[in-house]
Image 1 (cartoon, rainbow, N blue to C red):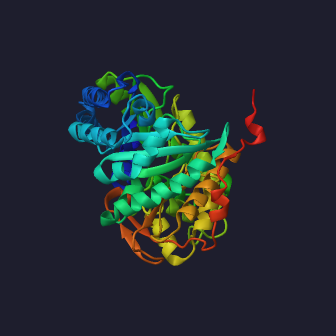
Image 2 (cartoon, rainbow, N blue to C red):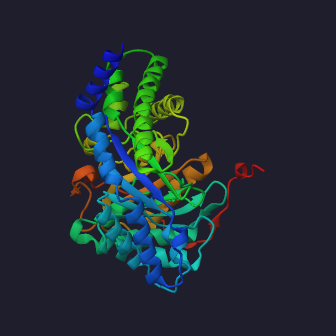
Image 3 (cartoon, helix red, strand yellow):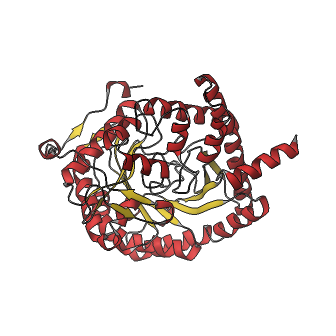
Length: 451
């Protein structure tokens, strides 16, 4: 029996693209707060490079010893708006540059946490950080940024929603030489979680320990291969099949997480169960949905198929690991999923259908390229719609959209690597400007009052 399981795991890794997508070290920077920004940044750099000094080497050692690919090694930190807010600095770009320098020194792929939490209102630090985002993402390579604009408990901060549309447009313009790449490292959330290991939205929440290790698993190819063996079966069988394979995937994630935390002397946090696709053939969430019987992802029935997938992944994963967290489910980033790209190009998947799908999946409108001349108010309205889905349904939703400079519908934007290729999608050309200009706060839903 053990030989069979070992061979199955080897096949899953070699043929079905099974991997650990990321091990992410979360680091609290609350003890780095100083009124002198220069001193604060030195403390930030010193703490990150000290704690994460061996993160990449440890990941590589585990890869070699266990034969399990670990694609990314990452760091998340306390939202910088909370840390820099005590300083007298009026622009926080220097903090982003410090994070970038620390990330390069430790050798990680990305560092997240150039973030602000403004679901109910702004502090001065929040305002300064948000205004710094475009320049920060222009001058850095590895820094990721996120802003939380709503929650089920507080409602939606529409002033922040309006501002983030403008910030996204400006970020695209400042990184136009890289086809708006800065926007691929910027996420706008509702109900952001504190232990998310996935970029670009990872930050280390204030309720977390001083330093913790979180793991993000993947494996869309493994799920698709499992479903190929139950072709034509009832959905009860489909769900059970996904649950069983999610159990195995999560077990592997827990093994890697415990091993890494033991070697680094850092507490193990959570396993994020998310099925995260890549542009590689055979590593697509869209292909899983099509394996359930859809001719093309985006056709009628896609939302139901995605709901089944998301639910079954969570059920199987929770049985496999005591500490499950993060976002946990199925991601549907367009540019990072070969099947999604093909569905957009075939005309079966559009923004409206993607929005419906986000009501039942892990995150939201993710890695979507839109025309470069898309008005900031339209981007803000997209954020508002996603935030509403998250707030009303008590789930995390997000928008990571790229208004591609100089591009129009039908063009392509090439990012390369895991960020892939994004076909530019059409947006509704009717104005949302008067809606966004109202500002204020959309109140929390009635079911938020739990006490």
